[in-house]
Length: 307
Image (cartoon, rainbow, N blue to C red; front, side, top):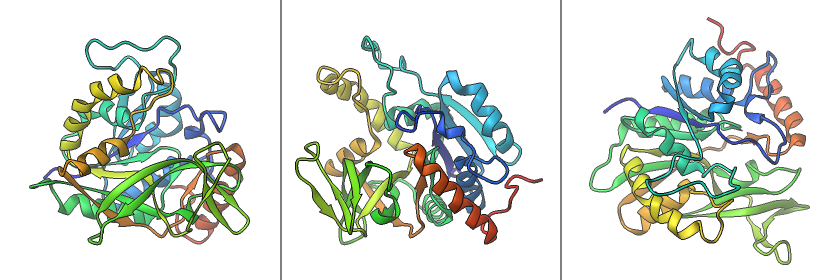
């Protein structure tokens, strides 16, 4: 079995944050969030990283992170472009939004030849997640069922005090496999708890703080790429008429279909680390403070990539 590789989705424009947050420094020596994820991934065992970016940000991205990391990891690039569609399909007029996380992974399919993990470029996941992910991918292969995995986090360790967040709320089976993951697009904190709304705030439903949620840290076999590609045209047929400018082909959608069809089992791995991300510009000082404390405590060197 080939060694697991890491796929980093970095093509998003950070619309809510208001800038190219993927390359915004948060560390003491200009490090960006993905520096810390890659450092953790490398010490967990990952040797190859595939960045999924847009051609438009290629030079800035390489200068900000790619060239630096290439000294210690095998760095490859894939490009998520709007016109990468099945034969016979065209970009809807006025569409500028990327096609979503599943489309991002498909952009890297020619660079993947074995098990792979998927993360967001603008999230801090913590070292535990990469350890359990690499260990699982290194010791499991597709058999009678597709044998995939994901790392779940405790909801209370992932929310923002500065606005609503979207999270994949997970339900697990007794054997620890994933039964379902439901995207809740407006989760907010309030005094004493966390809740979500599906009707614009007319009504709210509480969520316990220890609810397991997905932060888009998935582990797949190569089989996932064929399944996602095969389903893409049908997804376009179903979603383009209703929402041509904003519909997104999400990873959890394909995962849920494979579970329901009895083709895949997804082992839910767990991390108790606190997740950090810059969903809103106001989140950045919190991330910088957390990184500074972790550096002072010796969890990270001040210069991550010193030779």
